[in-house]
Amino acid sequence: MDFPQDENCESKRVFAILIFGNLGLSARLSYKSILQNHKNGICVASDNAGANWIRLNTPIERTRDICFHAIPEHFLLELGLDSLEFDTYSNFGKERFIKLTSFKWYLLLDILKKHREVDFVVFSDLDVIWFEFPSQDPFHLKANQSCVSLIQDDTPRGATEYHFCTGIMFWKSSPKSIEILTNLFETQISSNLIGRLVPDEPILNQYWRQLGDKSILI
Image 1 (cartoon, rainbow, N blue to C red):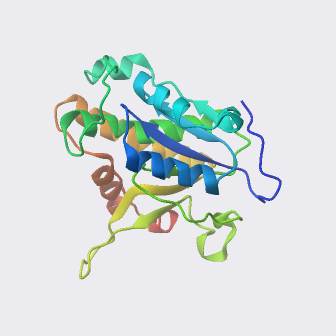
Image 2: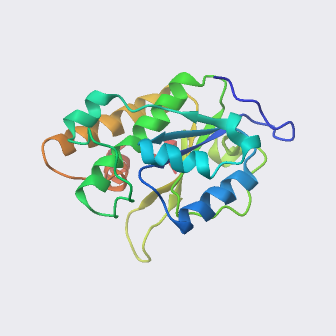
Image 3: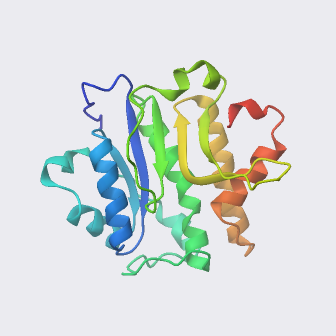
């Protein structure tokens, strides 16, 4: 589907969110803030409970903005996640939660492949409150022209290397983004398949540390 765009927005963008289980009040507040500050498309990857949650919490006038991205069943089977009927949120750090975070990369990748009209994608965890959103494409700024991704800096004070938080990420629509996201997804899901459970954030930070040209991610 092609998303209708806000006439006041100078760039085509979509939000990306993962929803697994029946989420609580904090997630509803986060989602409400996204709806209030972002008038365009919202791409969702979810289980059945998450799909019901998004339908219940989306105003009727915004339902046309929701686009569901189905996760291929074979990935779920390989990870032992074939039963996605859980009605509760997967707790941070638990095995199922770690496995599910693999699909951040899958969702972003699927969006860039299927929505060619989009300039960039914003991923947000649902523990983030959005007070405002940039009206212009941040990749057009001179400081960001070499970047394909803009990611929240969560570097501890005194650390010698950057550490990025994957709770907020901007990804530019480009072949390089697709290449990187493919690498991140394949690395994380492969690790999880052999029982070495690694969440999405260490996967990204390990990838960045190994990059020769670090200017593409900031």
